[in-house]
Length: 199
Image (cartoon, rainbow, N blue to C red; front, side, top):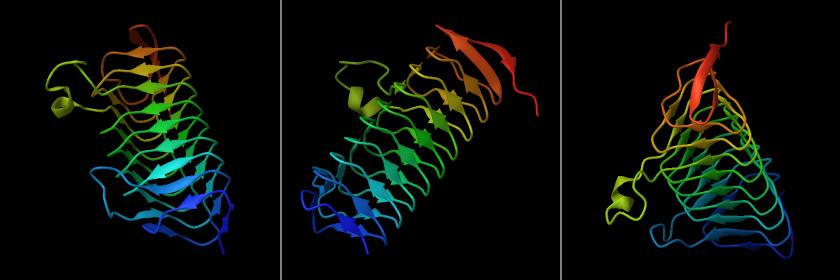
């Protein structure tokens, strides 16, 4: 049986798994212009912490955890065992693989992909607009691809469409202006490879 706070609002288009906890002042299943009448699914054993908003059309797997005041827009696929930290914003049309860990105050823009077991540190910002304010900006959005087991240090900024390689390590405060190779260690602004991880 799920445990839903009396102050939470759950819209009729929401399907909850077993043992889901939804804390105070959450709103689940908010209508979005392009997602009317779509179902939001939240898997078993998930915890949605106080003040979080989740829009229509999300497919969220088992053992999901949100921090307080997380905002998840519409039409995302979030696989099992994902954690999203306090005050993070997940825009729409995003894929997040199983076991991904997103820390507090992270911004993930639309059309981004995060593969399984990646680790995103606090205050990381991904971007998707190559030409902000251009009349065709919305038709040309492209989010980054974060590949499996990549580790991104706090306060990193990743520019639109960049590919972050599997198993790589990005140092805190880096600005990623080019693709990062698998297992590379990169740091700086603009970030440069300084080493590689050997297995």
